[in-house]
Image (cartoon, rainbow, N blue to C red; front, side, top):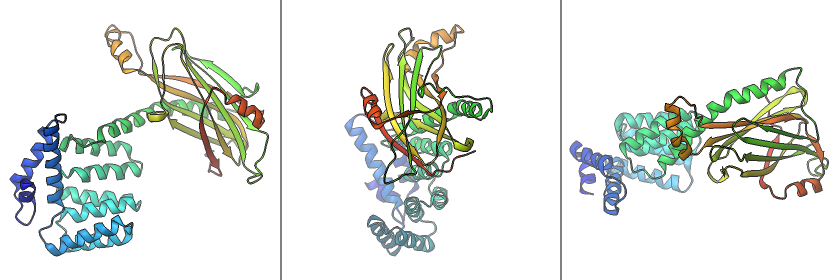
Length: 370
């Protein structure tokens, strides 16, 4: 705490702030006493960054925070702007306004304020995280990860950030891996010679890596009285890791290409990590089903699933790779192209038995790409 006071304006000592940063970097998490020391160093820096050295400015910052806590975001932003006008060299004003702008969904403004704050305090770990969050929210995932990692370099003990970085990096990798697969499926469906399999709305495929997938897509014959123009479709999927599969596999994502009347195709990707994840040992299977609704008539569907070999099996394969035998991290299997079958509500209730039901996706009047 004493170091935090010494690092705060009006007579801030650079040596005191540097000492706190050293504690953040060098204290290892684990032992309770060491963790408490690291937490205290972080709190000391945070306290110093929220003091300008001018009582009137600090009071306005506190007032802005009170407004923000009560949900008066616009008023809080106005108060923080006044703080910045009076004390442009005070990092607290920029950082607090960046946070408020983020909550107001003004991601461009939030990013700009974060950069101003980081010009003043390049190791402001809270601002580094905030910048990453604003970039992620605006769609710049890769750039967000860069700033998250920078925050961890400054403060390795930031709770919850390492798994967040790992999840973002994995999602980026998965999207990059899936893109050519989805493109291939969409191109096949736009080929004039394409004729979907239409045997009762069901299809099956198996790849050389031991993954077997079968799926069904059915149009419900009943129509909602509340939404007579809304069509409902039922999807059922089974994924099996065959008996001769070399190792367990873990789910990552699944993707679909839904072709509607007029040739319009809607690509749909779903990550299957976290609570939605599953692991398949050899000979095990995972079965799930879901609905989607649309105001457009579905004429064909295709897709695929993406899984990864578990970490232990990949490590065991390191020797094989050194001997020139390839071991892929990702495994994929196609969901065969098909046309929807017809089903009643009773059919669907019966088909749900033994399958995990994951809910409804409402596509409604979403604008489909041609």
